[in-house]
Amino acid sequence: MNMSEAKKEKAARDAAIHEHLKKSKEYYKNKKQVVADSVAIAKLHWENTGNPLSVWRAYSESRNAGLAVPDWVYEYFDRVGLNLWNLSVTEGLNPPKNKRQVDRAITKALEMKAKGKCGGKNVFSTFHEKDMELATEVYLYIIDGNKPGLSCKYVSNDHKGKPSTSTVKRAWKKYSPIFFPEKIKK
Image (cartoon, rainbow, N blue to C red; front, side, top):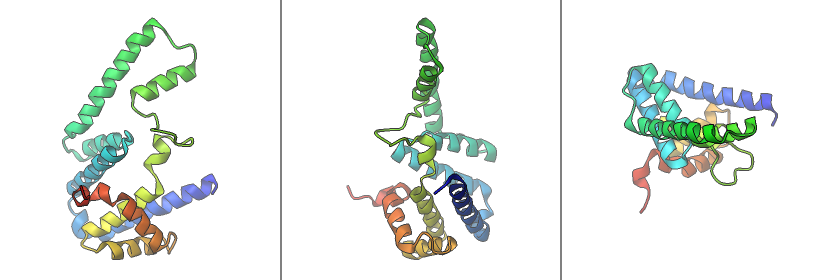
C-alpha cells in the first residue's frame, strides 16, 4: 500500500468514526462526556501499550474541552520533565557529537523510544495501529447499547466490507481488554 492509499484509508476510518458520533445524538449532546470517555480510552491505551502519544492526546483533549487534566498525565509530564532536565545537565557536561545523538537522547527522555524490536515502527506509526482503531469503533457501538458481534458487523459495513466482519472481530478480541479490563480473567 502506498502513502496516498494509506492516507485515504485513514481518512475513511476517521470519517466513519466521525459519522458514527454524529449519528449518536444522545451520546454526542454532552461534549465533555465524549471527551472524558476519549481521555479514559487514552489512559487505557497508555496503560496497555506505554505509547506516550496517548498521554499527549489526553492532555490536549482535556485542555480543549475545559476539563481537568488527569493526574496520570501530570505524572508522565513530571517524569519526562525531569528526564529532560537531567539530560540538559549531563549533556551540558559532555555534549553529543552530532544531531542524531541529540535526537536519540530527547526521544529517550520523552519515553518515545519504541519498545522491543518493532521493525522500524515508532510511537507515531503504532499509535494509529489499524486494529486498535477498528476496536475503538466497535467500542463506540457497544457503548451505544449494541452487542459486540453486531458492533463488529456495523464497523465492517461502515468500511463497505473492507475489512471483513471476521477481521473486525479479531481486532476487537485483540483489544477488547483495553476497553473492558474488568473482563480479563485473572
